[in-house]
Image (tube, one colour):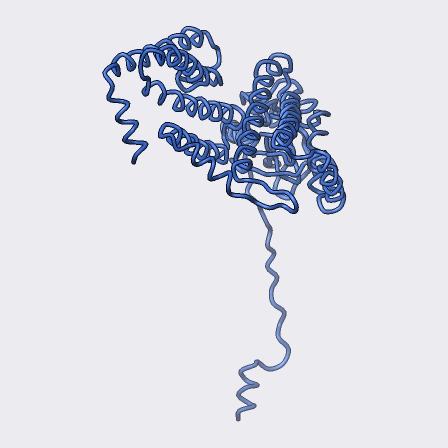
Length: 430
């Protein structure tokens, strides 16, 4: 309570109103600069400006610079406890905004990213409170006194926390650079969505690896010791992680060869759907009924896959019709062709065709063949439309669609030889 009482006593000085006015002026100036620059920003997910100016990174950084400059100028003439409080608050806000905006752009649908963001927010505001109360140096000294022994070397809790924070900063900056490159460079220069995705994943992986190595070096870890870890990792990939490594390599092969692209309609192991996303380990395929299939990338490389959109998206569909033997074949063919052509999704080229396939037990069997150019919209609906038009046209023309017919021949029972069963039974009982 002593630091808090001291802070409250300092906040009671006479020039507090002037100090408050300076703080409000600095915040207003920072917001005005961000608004003047950010209103011309085309993206609503900008890391610098955010979606509402104040939730970007630029606003707390500008406010911090203005408040800190005002603090240096005013502290020569009066006490500035309010501006001294504002500095750690704005530093924490800038760190939280940086982490939040970068994670939102890099991992827009990740629940783990949201959890890390909330955890960092609590830690940042806790550190700001300790800084304001003047307890942060005492806490840091206490953390320095807590030692962990790793073999012959010792590591303090403070060094561990500083290493984690420095690693986090480096990794966040790496994610920021990769997101900026993906948005401002790849989106304009690479039109293919699959190729853009593999380039973005590769750039992100390289930047994260370089950032991780820099973070380890900043903490004081000898990078030459990682050679042993790299050798062990290679052995593990060679034996225990063969399938996992094969799926990762296959994912990059698919993206580079463009044998499958996002948006293609494919059929894999009797599962037909649209390629929604191509991950480094698996490919996500969604069927028209909403079901999703997670297919390992190795399967797409080693097995036969039907890509209905790779060369020609047109698909041939067939429906069968049976009419009575007394029907005129030429009239039936003309009716079937007109009914198929009248369906909007049936294309004119290649042309529809009608074939008399066989003389069935119940009637003449015809096969109607027609083409569609949008199989991703489903095939059942267009076949239903064709069948309904065929049924309506045949009924209007008075052509019979026969029911299955069977002829049953009744043969008289042969005369029974010998006395009747009742007489025998009677004789036996008598």
